[in-house]
Amino acid sequence: MATTKIWKITGNMYAAIPKVIDYAKNPEKTTSEKGLLTSAVNCDIRTADRDFIYTKLHFGKTDQILAWHGYQSFKHNEVTPELAHQIGVLTAQELWGDRFQVVVATHLDRGHIHNHFVVNSVSCIDGFKFYASTETYQQMRNVSDKYCKEFGLSFIKHPEKGRTKTYGEWNAEQKGQSTQRSLIRKDIDKAIKMSVSWQDLLTTLKSMNYEINTNGKYAKLRPKGSQRFFRFDKLGEGYTESSIKERIRLSGTYVPKTPYPKRMKYNGSFRYKKKASGLKALYLYYCYQLGVLKKRSPRTFVTASMREDIKEIEKIQEDYLFLKEHKIATMQELTAYKKKSTEAYAALNTVRRKLENQCKASPDNSTFKIHLQITGKELSDKAKSIKICTRIEQRTNLIHQNLSEQRKEKEYERRIRSSGNRGKFAPEDIY
Image (cartoon, rainbow, N blue to C red):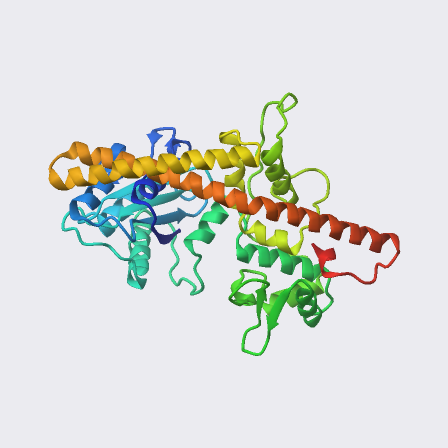
């Protein structure tokens, strides 16, 4: 049985295309006993990113949707890596092989074997762009099912209709990161353990700063700060009204059918590792308070403001790694680094304009184009550094405020417990 999905890739051409292709080709994910499971259609697998970019430059289509990232997953223990890759190549050739460049990579690093497709949005034959639609998804499923049937694999004859995940949600789940829906599910899980009925659960969720709407056919809830409501029955298995009522009846017991993530074991000693300090220490401590870093002690309180930052945890981790990589410990060092990056960006921008003029004057000179690509990548890196510096400047004060608020709420909880008033609780007690 193979499941399929496809998402669009946008952003800076010189950064986004190499990034998604490098992710697909990652040798740590694609190496089998018989070698690398990577192939390309209408391009060279070794230079696929440059081939994609050259096609776009040749036809003058370098913006908006840059590529499409497809996904084909197989049932656990039903297919060998080599057969999965063969099916992936056949699928890519039939769907896009007549006009588009495609990278096909088979990943073996998870519990199930799956293929990744990276499709250039611009045809290398006629320069027209590929746009995915409802028919595209159905065609992709049909072709995948055809080859599964041909090779004796199972497939879904009558797939259930329902909400599909966005690329952002899928990508976050692949990295083990939180999404807005996963945070809502965690809150519902907590509320179930504190409730004795469906109405009691809704009241508990209201105390957790959720807005509840039960006027329509389906019950919905909206977390504080969100612009949209989420239907209970669209949150996943175990979160329909009837399922939640049954879980309450069973005291919140619910065993999901999906397996737990594989536990990882790290070798080595951290005994002599130098401790973090300054901004790095602040961000590292904050990640622990958000529950990202696990310790043996019980999880600490997470305030409403900190809960919002859980959705931004990928950026917070990126900020910490940036500080660590560039050895920035103070706000003064951060300001100096940002100033240096801004000056470098201005200088590179001047170089880029000169190269663009040279390319216009000599359109057949490939040397100018290559230098322009390299300069564009360097500009993108500098712009990203400036953006991260600005984000750290803005977030640092908020982190101090959130940690201060957390300390006050913990002190409030301590006083409530010491006074013996365990029958009542404030909203922050449930975090």
